[in-house]
Length: 168
Image (cartoon, rainbow, N blue to C red; front, top):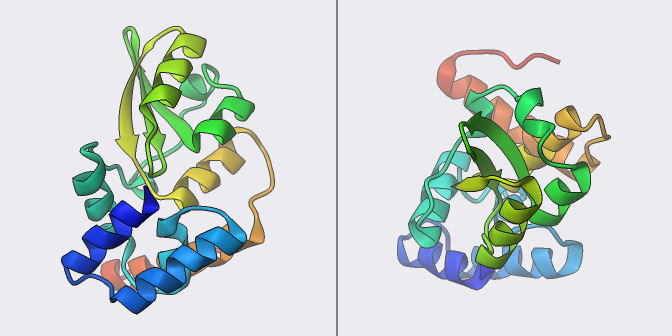
């Protein structure tokens, strides 16, 4: 599945084949997702990777940096399920739970999560680094240094674009 996203990024001229190959090797070596590897390489902006993930997956994207965590929604999903799905709950609307998921998004995992949660799931795609950040907040766990470093880089990029200085 990551190869599909990599191919799309190359076809759209958003990354070179060499960068995509390097990012795929990083995923094989270190784990994580292609979007995290590309952000580590500073090869593409978070905004562009989100747009590409949406196009390839067919699932709308959400920029988690624009929202705050929702403890009420988090109560519906255990930390273990959130880790297994690479996901975080966004909100609850009647019998539906909106969930941000990393790419690739497995339909079988969505069905399993819906069963475990007892509600229909409305999926959104998000970058792994933001999902990991939200998981650390919602479930009060330590954020891996790899993701801390990526967040520092992309939040500096965002602060330059918006004129805001990131808080420490």
